[in-house]
Length: 299
Image 1 (cartoon, helix red, strand yellow):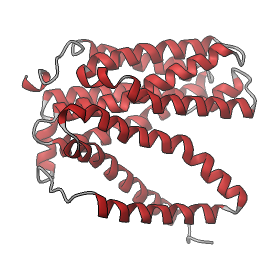
Image 2 (cartoon, one colour):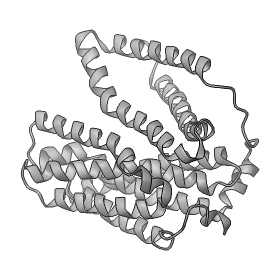
Image 3 (cartoon, helix red, strand yellow):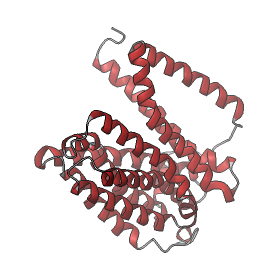
């Protein structure tokens, strides 16, 4: 046995979560400093598409390595790759001092910015809505659409690949009008969710809906992060930290809401819960959709 018990496992998971949260809170602000202003949207799209690629490729690759050797080798390989990546970053990335000194008081000051709070409220509803349904995506495909394991795997690849494409397809709208782009994404994801809820078999329309859902969702984290940076004033690191915290909390909240709906009402209600949360998100975004870049930050 590698660890003495569940408490040690929980402690290691906590360290993993702290590291992942710290990375994502800094990734966008580092990209903002490295890229010129006119290429900021594409820079953030590249950063977040890396996360999408890792999500799509990571589990299949680790699973294949575990089947060839065992899960110990898979985890050891991952640890080696992370160490190499750390060294590469240390060599290639320049040293960058934070723009502000982080503290509870500075976080409170950042949260007091009305435009930033708008981003966080939008994040709450959009992300919770996504994971209310996506947590049970595989089960829904199997139970409601009667997909075979091979078709489910194909559907997950299609969704993941679409997520990678989304930030680049919508890069121009993401940079020009984040709130408007998020409303379009909500509409696209809502139509796709309704389409999947209405389907009863493994049909071409189901894969079309999955592709659309993945593409629109892939643009959402990039757009939210872009909007967050534009709304954080002179404290982008603090705004990004609040955004990542809100994103992760919303992810857990959405999964919990979906779990209750599935447990009490059935698997099809996960998509219905997402639609309700997305409608609340659309209501939150509605009065901000016409904001021009930088206008909201001046309020």
